[in-house]
Image (cartoon, rainbow, N blue to C red):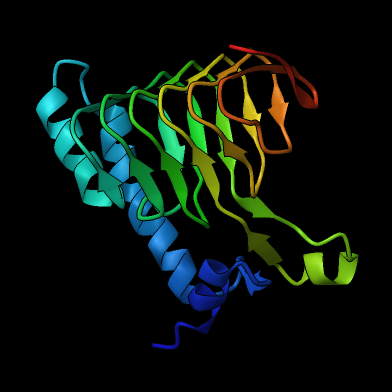
Length: 186
């Protein structure tokens, strides 16, 4: 099967997200596993952990991802050690999303690697692009934070609740707002 669209996606080029049968099949396969994860009893930690290991690109050490959780592919998500993500989080992982060690994410956060062209004709063809997101070590992300394509959040940062992170945040920074801005060193 031709993998040209997936290759373009992974290179950060415009690609067919909506009509490519391979990408559609990969998203459905991930969503099938997520459906099982999100329907599990809270008591079934071992099964949840095994299913996440099945879809995630990498998970180093222990992690907890609370249900419900949603992502597109799973294989582009990499977790460091001691990772915690609270309920109702979304990762659109068309590009790599890397989390360092000791990352704590509050409820209702979103990490979007996917973006769409401003040109309406391209957008209506189902074209999009993807840029990676990197979150460093020892980062705390408050509730309802949105991180947009191509952003890097440095080590030891705190991102305040409700922030929309559109640009890189340097290490050792408290950053808040929409758009999210560094307000002081920590």
